[in-house]
Amino acid sequence: MRRKALPVKVADVTIGGDAPVSIQSMTNTDTTDTKATLKQIEELFKAGCELVRVAVIDDNGARSLGIIKKHSPLPVIADIQFDFKLALQCLEEGADKIRFNPGNIGDNDKLAQIIKKAKEKGIPLRIGVNSGSISRELRIKYGGATADALVDSALQTIRFLENSTFRNFIISLKAANVLTTVEAYRKIADQIPYPLHLGVTEAGRGLKGTVKSSLGIGSLLLDGIGDTVRVSLTGDPVEEVYVAKEILQAAGVRDFGPEIISCPTCARCKIDLEQLVKKVEETVKNVDWPLKIAVMGCPVNGPGEAREADIGISGASNFGIIFKAGKVFKKVALPDLFGALEKEISEMLKQKSSGNTSRNGG
Image 1 (cartoon, one colour):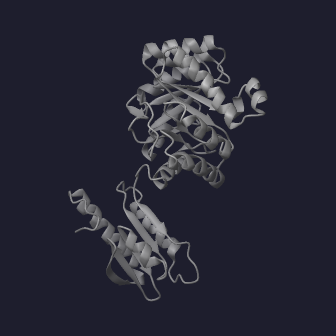
Image 2 (cartoon, rainbow, N blue to C red):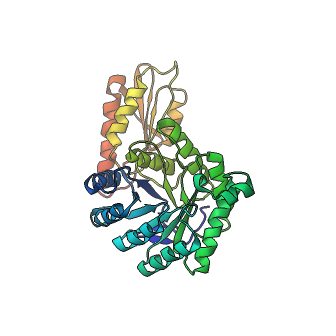
Image 3 (cartoon, rainbow, N blue to C red):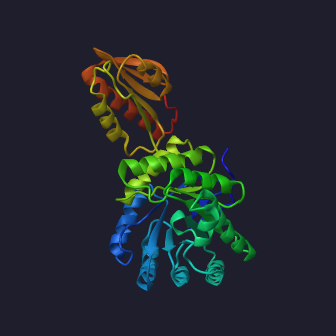
């Protein structure tokens, strides 16, 4: 069962409450280059991103955020480090949320000014605790940037916010270490009612970053913890969105489109399964209906997996079988297998668009 958090509105996106787990990313353009930044935000939007964060490092960046906000298709979050005055300026410029790090934002007098301005504007905050900026005092107390140190840092700030009668905020506790990250979120989840933003910070690039993020974010989602996610990968932030969508769908908390099940292949496979799967992926890449499609290469596990799918195929030595709604639909010659599958998927999608949502076409 998913942990129920207090709802927090970021422009038109609700985080927490009964809202679906949302996807965030962050631009890596120079924020003062508003044209390049808006172009990247548009790419993120098309990929399925639902909130976007931009780094604001000076006054020019804060002014640029105001321009970006006016033209962005997504809610815009200002990422502030060290200079609390930039947070105040971004609130005036129309930021939809302010993310700050309590480890480097300064004393409580500075935080009080941010809270006051956020109250006036009705804008939420995110308290982004990172292992790399845990205070020296907490590092000494806990022997490093441990999960307990992350939780303690967050709770200190939370208490100050609550004492300031401010509850319009979201919490994150991120470390580059997956175990530390997961432990910290699990420790704090039952102690506070506020939404949790999930992520493994500085996860790396490509496969390694994807695996670390999947383990950390996925473990917590399976625990019912998490209200919004950001996958932190080195490189094009659009890739973060694609990975986040896969994690959320695999964890069973969102549906973004077809799920393709395919076997790893072995000596029993007599067809070019990899190319067949690639063709199917290309065919359904713009489909948002959560069809379950099985593309199997042999008669051992293939028929069983295909029967569990909405539609599936299983290859054999001389022919292929198409399954629909758990039943054998037809046999086709191997050269015609992809074309026959493509035709059936197209027909199912046409029936859905015409109002018949039955996935078996019946």
